[in-house]
Image 1 (cartoon, rainbow, N blue to C red):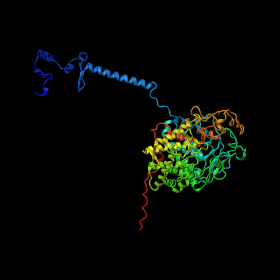
Image 2 (image 1 turned 180 degrees about the horizontal axis):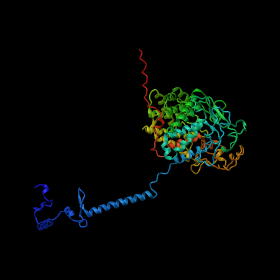
Image 3 (image 1 turned 90 degrees about the vertical axis):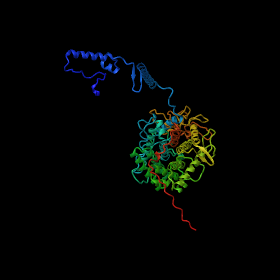
Image 4 (image 1 turned 45 degrees about the horizontal axis):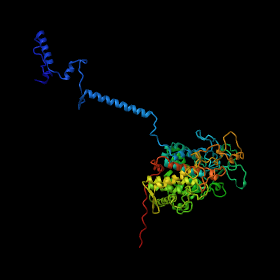
Length: 621
């Protein structure tokens, strides 16, 4: 019989002779069929077909496909899972909404706290029309006529802006451009640390305030120039001069009413090369702002050409600069500026210049001397050597640069050795401050630069998977360098015999009589005249305004310090000093796992394919 011929319950599908059967027979047959079907036990599926929804029995088990479980156990298990999920969600909600007390981020370290303050000093030093959010309540617009009244060249008529150098209101471009170069270098290496501290936008704004001003100091659209603004304001009071100027008078910058002369130079290689370094390094900081970066590179190129073509020291002769910021030579600026020009442009002609043995020799790379290895606004050789050692460590350009780069690298190692207490190149005070300027006044500006170079070089070595370096036969780990930097900066922050912080506003005990005109005169709507402000200069009372973040000149060689306003050798802060401080603080700040940015400095440098050295001369019998 075919598979379709049977009822699935076992009975015949068709009723025989239905057509001929009577109604009575048909009825009897159907009753017999019903009884036959109901007399056999039905499986569950069959029952479900027959019974209505309300009549179906509840299952006692649940078929999950691979296993069959008791319905009661299944319900209990499902309920437990749902309850557990609800409980977990509820706990997570509580954890996320209630303030946390146990897993806070660690508090900022002292270096980060001091960094916030050290950057504020630059806000207090701004000249010209201040931005809305300058955050120094006692400062206002000042020196709005700079460059306009003086008999300057036709190309330079607007010198409004920039930074005042120190406690006076003079704008010295030589130390100011070094300060901007140092800030830019620190941003290129440690932008992640600035970002973590929430200061990246701030420091870039400070750099731009400087570079915008430098671009005003020459014809920045020209390819060739023959004049450059070097200084605004005057401070020479020698010979008992009583002419009103920025040193004779003691006035708030906002109240200056005397003439501020602009000084130009026509052969100033050191100044032009340093300003080129400032613009070139800043062009890397602003590489994402292509138009501005390009403008900076063009300006740097013009300045560096001027530096090379018109040889001479900017402070030569009887210029004011020779009194305050005398430059000893321009060869170090050629090496330093050439290196920065190479990194900003990728043009190998600058690298050839920066690695020319003759240039290095003139800059003093091959001889010692008492000030060898001391980075300052006057001598950039140590900075240039560290910068070019970086090139060798990470890019290994090979021939024809390798020999001089290896020399620079070796010299850098020697400089780092000289910073260590086991060597006697430099004395230390009893409190531990290294005497890089051999006991002369104003030591801190040199100390912070050395701390920056040491911390930075240790980061270079670690990024190059090098655990340390040799000083003669002895091997020192990178931690030794970092520890040197920390001990020096800790001294400045207050770990010294006087327990005094030399950064204004940091800690509880810091200088209150800072040699600074704006900070020492109250902002009380009274305009004090040139001599009228002398009473504030000579007052024994603390400054009415706190110049937050200013690093003063520092203690003497016996760890002594006199908090006296008239003694600038102790209490005057400077742009160059604070720039080195900022660089050192950011290098030491934050998590040590945040290393240097290896690549940004090389962003404009094309791939390097070392040239094979020339074959040896043919052998002659």
